[in-house]
Length: 324
Image 1 (cartoon, one colour):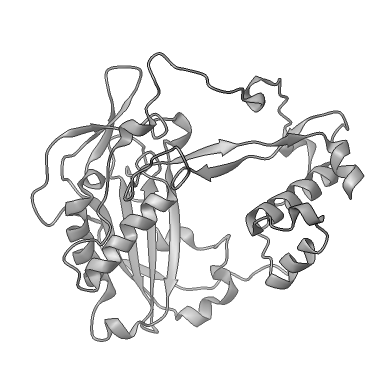
Image 2: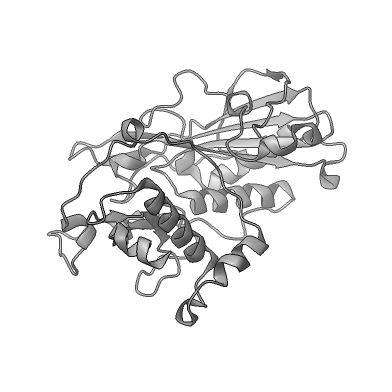
């Protein structure tokens, strides 16, 4: 059954720039070779929904968050700068100008419980809760963060944020937002101080290939999914019972597989069989792997840049058909 979009209106104040609460270094910092990829030069959004918070009784969540944001930017001051391309090979540089991040304060005439299941992705009202300020969405020369706090009639609020992906991955953003939350609760500074050190993900000069990446060297064919298949985008939610049911079909040597591995394998296999590829074609699934905490990577605690790589296991469709 299709979800009915809730009807409500949002009144926004004019967007404003929130700079660091104190003077910060004026310098230029190079991003890493992972940050620098063309595929990461875009803005990605998150939307979070909060019930009425006892700690905020008598306080305006937008004011509390804006004040904490300004103080957190003292420690994460590169977020208050702007990206540009350097003189060599379009290398990205963040100019730490202290201009600030975009902040929008808003009110919606609806309660959180009235939104119901529509808050599950794909949420139909994103543009109302994370307003795309004209001229703010380019990768270069624009604010690196856009935040909108929307107060609800029930006392709850919606926190929406858009981040320039070249500056950080999702875990780096979470680290920053945790810092904002700690300061909002009264901390003088984040319990985990940020670490820049983007040079740890800069390629060696000259490059050194230490292993063979078959997915990069094997010839590939791109299938036009839009024209060849009638695809529908869906978000699938698996309960604990669903996951246990899938695990019950695993052979003993795979019993310790993580939930992520189990669900990824299940969806990859089912999708591959459903699309009825040529049995001799090689198909792959791509997913990101976090480098933090991995042996030999030496990613420092507090690093908030992009620290991931894509892996792409591959297999022939007839393999999936045999194991169904």
